[in-house]
Image (tube, rainbow, N blue to C red; front, side, top):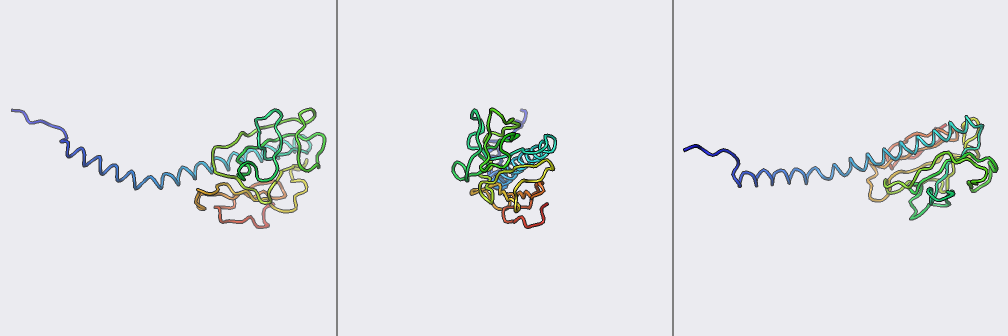
Length: 194
């Protein structure tokens, strides 16, 4: 008689139980990793659009605006005011346009008849929020790539409730128009960001 090979039902159940325990132990760290990657992706996209707006201002001779929009996919899109839907800030999306008519008007306004829409960022699915300080920040670039009428560094915190401060990111935009990542959600910008 030939001996049967393979797993018994008891051996299979033990392996499945051990695997389930290991997965349950690893799941919280996967959540942190997923949140961190989502925030990093959002920060990178935001910084890329900020660099794009700055370079277009230099190329076009100034007056390029990047503003938060409550409905960036609307026709025509408009700049939003305040903290946005649900007080989630820039996560609702943003628009970048060449302002040909009113370079210093506040609040910023896109006019589809005269201005040129350069880029639209639809609402983000993550992170939970992108809060700007001071609230209602509009990035208006001059022909030299500097921010127009910026008295201080703007601080944007990517994350929000439901995200540990260790995975949140603070992006600082100085009057020179350049952005940098200051660190996690506990950091401040300071005055050294030109």
